[in-house]
Amino acid sequence: MDTKTYTITHFINGGETIEERDYEATSVSEALTMAERAEAGQRTVTFGIQPRDYDEALAEGVAFNEADGLLVDAHE
Image (cartoon, rainbow, N blue to C red):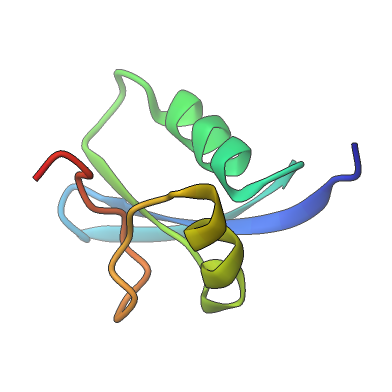
């Protein structure tokens, strides 16, 4: 499978710190999984995606707020 670079925004501790990190992945979902694994158990993080990835994320079933790209709880 082909990979591309996805930029995932890490909003750390409620947005106290904001970091953008690039992940080489085959999909938005995979990039988000990589981002979550990188932060696992370390701190409270909310993740966001870039507007250029919105259509792909929607097709993959990723739940996010289209106003700011932040992920939302799909179970709400």
